[in-house]
Length: 449
Image: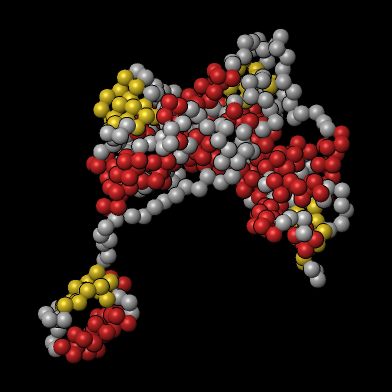
């Protein structure tokens, strides 16, 4: 069964893909230098700080002495990341050496010694109206994100449309939806797998598409990435003035509000945005589990599913691999069946993805159990998947009625030499070859005749 995987890149991979000129422009901002430093692996941070006040280059052999023998793999990972981000420049003369990027080095030195004003100061409480609590803000962020996803997969199900243009929505839907002739768009294999990702991985996929398409909208990628990195220094729940932003940043903040990264509010004179945890954790690795939402699914040993949720999106996701029996205002009840799983497998979803989704979204009452999903359910899901993989279909051509046994045996040897022989019956002089071998086999048999 073909498998299509969406790779939601780490934010620093996007930074590393910028041109050398754009990276040097980014490093003019001391706070961005700090954000980049935060994102580095532990050894990478150590190397930057050790070389921060070294003007020249350091030999690669000397740096290898900074780590123990069993840490060499981590050493290579750190060096590769520093070179990708152009924090290190590699010099190859007689011996390989590394030098710290002068722009990055100078601005990080200034930032560590003198500090500096934050990119944007919070607004005083006497100017803003009542701000939402962190719990309300998190609920708002998840609500906005689910609304966006519903519009992404089916605009008819979205409770309210977003501000994204139809062309921008098509960019997001690229690879997630497929359409044949005049049929309405439907989820592709990548789309089904996208819905089973956790929120952070989904967000990174959308942000990546948003950045990749920025130049078509007349927006410089470096400016967009710079603003996203700045957001990581804002405090979740604090209000920041919109009127002090450029027109480009104002347009971006409206888009980010649709994604749940910020919440917009309007006062008598000023308007402001309030970052959510989705925005302030943008530069954190995807593997960080602190920003994951609380689970809602309980799976029983009899294959019954109880999902304590009011979300339409949760219901649609569960429908991908289970049979929904009924839905109450705050409870979705369903069952994992052989037929529902076969349908999921046909759509490109794997057993491991389904099990991972159930484990990641396990209700707090069962999340602490080991395992959080019953073993018999996990085993049966994998067994039903293996049932579909027992037989593999291979396009082939069938040959019979050979004029003589010598021609038949010569044909078998010819197909076998080309690794194209699938089956032979020497008694009745019949054989089957792979489809790609058919043309050569036909020419060979014409020569024999």
